[in-house]
Structures are given as C-alpha cells and as structure tokens.
Length: 114
Image (cartoon, rainbow, N blue to C red; front, top):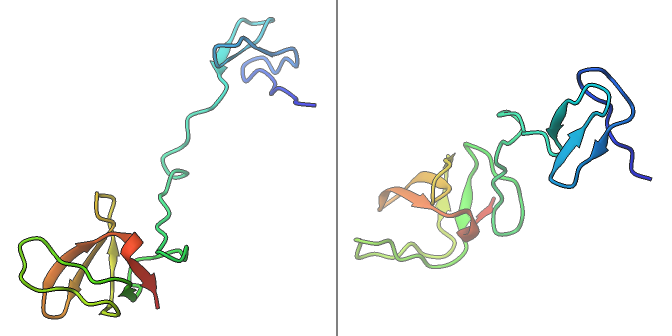
C-alpha cells in the first residue's frame, strides 16, 4: 500500500493527492508538489563511457572509433589514448588535448576508460 507523506506544516496524517500533481492537507489547507524539486547538489550529472564505466576528471581514455574533426585534415585513429580529460556540461562532454591535434572536445560515447 502506498503511504502519503504527512503535511510539512501541521504534520497531519490525513493528506491526499488531488490528481493535479499536488498533495493537499485537509486540516490546514496547505498544498505542495508531489515531486519535490531536486536540490542543486543532488542533480550532479554522471558521465559514462561507451562501456558504461563512470568517468571522472583526470581519467585516461581511448578513442573507440576513427574520428574526423571538423576543420582539420587529419583523423583521430581508433585506440588513441587521451590523458587527463576534463568533464564539462556542454554538447560535447569531454575537453582534452590530443597529441598532434591540440585542444579537442569529445563525446563520451566515442571513448572507453583505460
């Protein structure tokens, strides 16, 4: 059986869900959302490589397929090691430096943790 939380204001056990995503207390008329907003620290993004391993800043990864960077004549070959990655919250998840190419941004789906 699903138990509803008590009212955060008066601690009444007679709360109910009104069907619009709100809990309601019949004793004090307090209303609050069913899904409480997540705290800023709770929503930390988890970065995973192509195999599902969790990545962290400073890890070493290898490229799992040949990548052709835009605006460059070369190709980053499969198996290229990338040391000391930095995770960022952008369209590309990893900022790094690759020998022979310089500063790059990679997606986590194209790398595997070493």
